[in-house]
Image 1: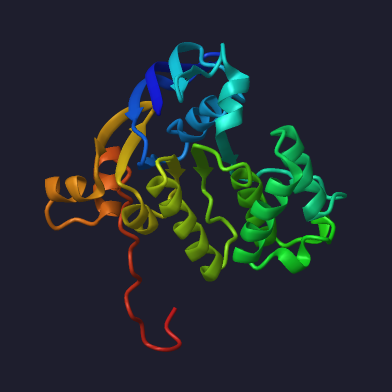
Image 2: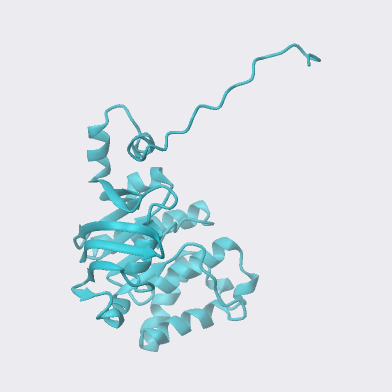
Length: 254
């Protein structure tokens, strides 16, 4: 479903992604992990057709993300990290705008929209201006917008940001349903405990390159006795120095 071959993306002299290659089949929840600045969000933006590769080939559903960008946009849903929304629109108006861009029949869009909004307990607030929404409510709206046209590929960049526990469980269920229906989810997050539970396979990237690609169980089996977080820190060389604990002193001592 997703084929990345030798992806390079440069910003001037900075090479954010350096020859990245991945193949992701249908029916898979794929975790994209890495420290800050590793190239995760850049890779997702290339997949979402927001930026072009400097070098390399990227296809989604058989469509080249540059030559067939419109075809790619028709089959993906994208939830970026920290997206800005139109504060003057209501939730309903924003979702209607997105549905129109996808040329969804109105009745189909309304049915799908109601199902998602009710799942996220946002239906009663969808008539309010987005500027009045909390951070979590905006995140629920973004996820609903990404899913209402039933994309074959769902791209998620830190999707749990701002979500309460109930909404997180709803999203996890939607992710599992997406994969079970033959779609693909690319899931980027720093919350590795959730990645371990929802992802079938993970790639760890560092300095724009893949340094590990396996199932969570496979990564743990290769590093006995370590958690996924510890494996991540070992592979990326990001293990923090221990914080010194001050010695106990008598009360009043200087």
